[in-house]
Length: 110
Image (tube, rainbow, N blue to C red; front, side, top):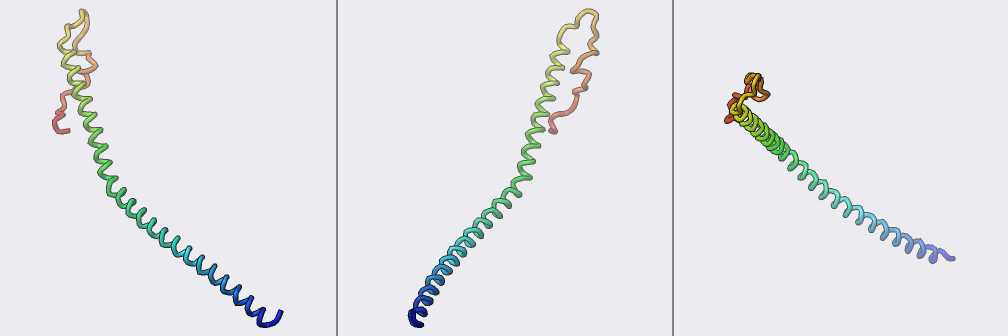
C-alpha cells in the first residue's frame, strides 16, 4: 500500500470517526436539553406542592375540628336524652357517663 492509499484510508477513517463524534455530540446535546426541560418541570411541580401543602393541612385541621364538633354535639344530644329517661329505682342521676363529662361547652365557636 502506498502513501496515497494509506492517506486515503486514514482520511476516510477520520471522516467516519468525525461523523460518529458529531452524532454522539448531537445525541448528548438533545439529552441535555430534554433533562433541563424535565428539571424545570420538576421544579415547577415542587413549587406547586410546597404552595398546596399548607392549604391541605388547613383543610385537614378543619375537617378534624368539624368531626370533633359533630362528636360533641352528638354527646350533648345523648346527655339530653339520658336526662329525660326515667330513673331506675335505687340509682342516682348524678352518675351519668354523659353528664359527668360536663358537656356544657360552646360549640358555635368551632
